[in-house]
Amino acid sequence: MLSSIETLKLEDSINEQPFTRHVVDGMHSEVQRMIALTRDLLLLARSDAGLLELNPRRFDLAPVAAATLSGLSVLAEAKQLRLELDAPAELPVKQDQEKLVQLMVILLENAIKFTPAGGLVILRAALLQKSSGTWLLLEVQDTGVGIPAEDLGRIFERFYRPDQSRSREGGGHGLGLAIARELVDALGGSIRAENSPGGGSVFRVELRS
Image 1 (tube, rainbow, N blue to C red):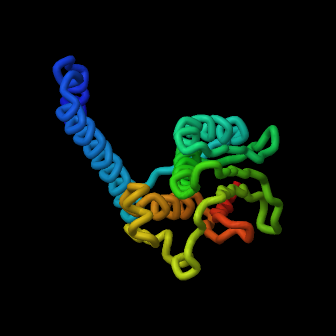
Image 2: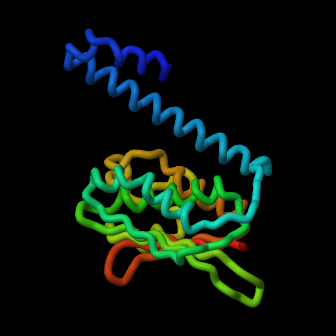
């Protein structure tokens, strides 16, 4: 379906008819949403079945985090947001790089979605030394609308959206943060969310490294 719609969008006759173009663009967006939902449900099904494969290896997270942030710059610029990275020049970790990037993208997209124009989203990364060993700390902080106190304990549930009107405006199916929690569980860590004293929210992840 996606290939057929994209082929239609290349036709000059479609572009010459505003209403038809609008309909085709709507179909394109909806198919992309269906693909994303299918992908998310598949990941959750694999996690439930214990089939979520991990490929841990040693790598430097600092340039990976910078590249991840850069990849979302267009999305942030469209909302007139600033993206910042707070991390050391080198950050050696042993983790599944692909899933770690997926986790950062989910948390960053969530922050961008609920931060108004002129706001700031910060990605922090650091290593923590604990009695149990070395841990990786990831934080995504925003200056957005924050999370109602009564919803803080439920935002990682599947299909749960604390503010329905806000969720409809931002799109999505209420699976992003649930997937983030599944990824964190698979990577051997913890995730929690809290509101910042000055406004906005902070999502904090700690992973064994």
